[in-house]
Image 1 (spheres, helix red, strand yellow):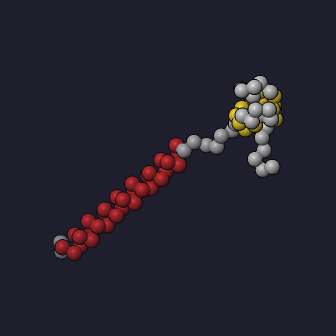
Image 2: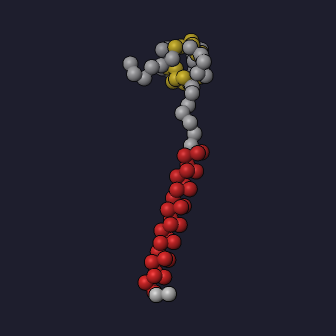
Image 3: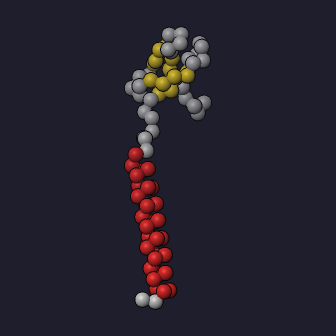
Length: 76
């Protein structure tokens, strides 16, 4: 075979290998990335502590002072 054809095949195979590794890496990161947190965020109106609790509760007891608080809305 001619040297220019051998060089072209070598470069093509190297590029194909790099692309294959990049695609496999992208798929593995997408598959194992953690999903969004389901917990609700609470902020104590007495001591200012910020904490989370299960998504199915509307009121949660502050771990610092024990006051019952409603969920904290970041949009307001």
